[in-house]
Image (tube, rainbow, N blue to C red; front, side, top):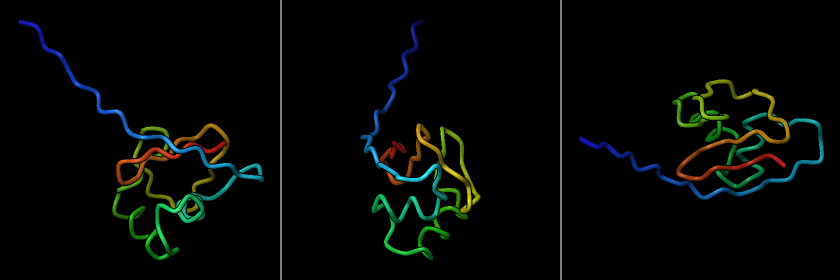
Amino acid sequence: MKISARVKAFPTKQVKIDTDFIKLDAFLKLCGAVMTGGHAKSVIIDGEVFVNGEICLMRGKKLHKGDKVKFDGTVFEVV
């Protein structure tokens, strides 16, 4: 019996930062994934945000170039 898995591809958007790092909550606002810091805090605490493939519950998580954030069906890459 052959089992095949279908991998769902998520659209990826590149988001440029001009600093060495950016905190996760600020990044979500910068890329337009959320409108407010309060909304960012809520979705992070609720476990809806993935950083580099793992759920991240730290809104102050430092993101660096190359990191990928997945939220609401979209992957945002820090460039």
